Length: 287
Image (cartoon, rainbow, N blue to C red; front, side, top):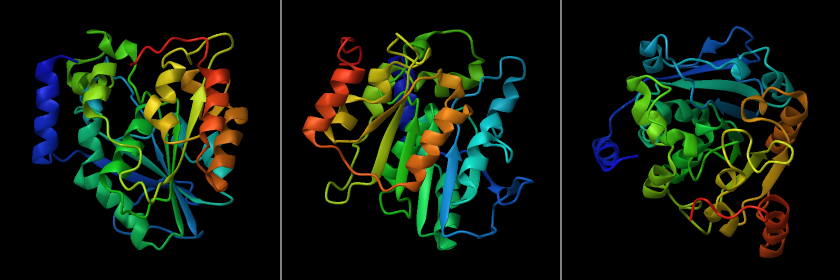
């Protein structure tokens, strides 16, 4: 991410540019009804599913329109796994500005407020890829929301090297893609716990391919970055590629279990054991 784009991102953050955001209820309403002013509350717990990057090389204008990704649809594996215990909602957002601008958007805050006002005892954010970065940024910016848990899956918290590529995506999406470079994530990172006395339940689901320290797109040490390790945020390994984390039955079962269970922060000893398992063979690429 070059200095000019970083300057633009910070400027946008400072003036509070809004972003088109849409939320749909996908369980128990199997039609995926838009949830704007009211929703159907049938459980005392809610999950909000937050997607990552979806490129639009053929029809770039679609990047400015909120949309559901395949795994968020009512009949998706994850939605069906969560539906017995949660009302499930899917988020869509325009991907034409840095992910940090989306995190500050009025429309995103309004969507979460709608869940708060419904009176859910728990509100869980599950973010895939850039959606995990977005979820973490959101709770850091707005620590006093009703969000009780954040689950990030295959998220480039420390950035992704592929985001440095100056091609492969339409110009309209450049600010979003380039906000996911290692340089951008270092410049715009926020603390894991804005209030250290009230740490939020959080877990990093780390996707990895066999014999690799990557899921094919994001490295393991970015999915469970140093600041999360230092804060004792646990990491749970699933051996699968980046794109199928929230679609394959095995990894979906892991994520659904984490959504239901009470999480706890790891001790330094537990973090070190996990480092030996997940990271020891790799030299840090995101110092």
